[in-house]
Length: 222
Image (cartoon, rainbow, N blue to C red; front, side):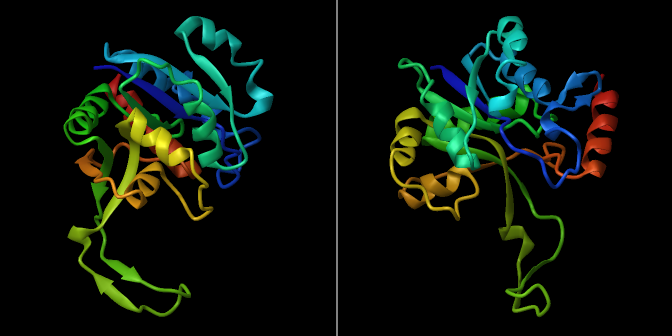
């Protein structure tokens, strides 16, 4: 059994407010996306790492291609376009594909392995964490429509790992603009997707405070 990792680092990071996309900022002396590359490289089952980046970063990324043996792919307008571009480079002999956000630098090889084990058994699995706070539903952001049991609400993370044929099949069709992650597409196709508790450290760096917290956690690990 083997798998390819598609690391999506093609976003603009507008919410973060930096001069360049956040995934290329130095985080504990390494560019953010590299922490994910390193985590996947530690697994012998990972036979290929595909890094999807903005078009203007393709030339800059060539040095990392040589050092880490990466396939560098140009990203698309939306996240799902970037994933689709990455999938086109997955080798023919690959059994499973892991999709991971380059802005989740705290991923570990242990979490990847846990998700992979469940995906191998069921065909599809994602890293996730159960909601910590009380959950309120609102349509206008003002009035609460209802409250829901937080123990039934999970926050999706990455990696999200699927059988290659399942993922390629759902990406071969027209993709609705409302899709926010890969498991949504797979769920809509009728496939069962399993949750794997990855805890709370595997968060996505979205705001400057997330960046500072990620720095502290990485320093503690090292």
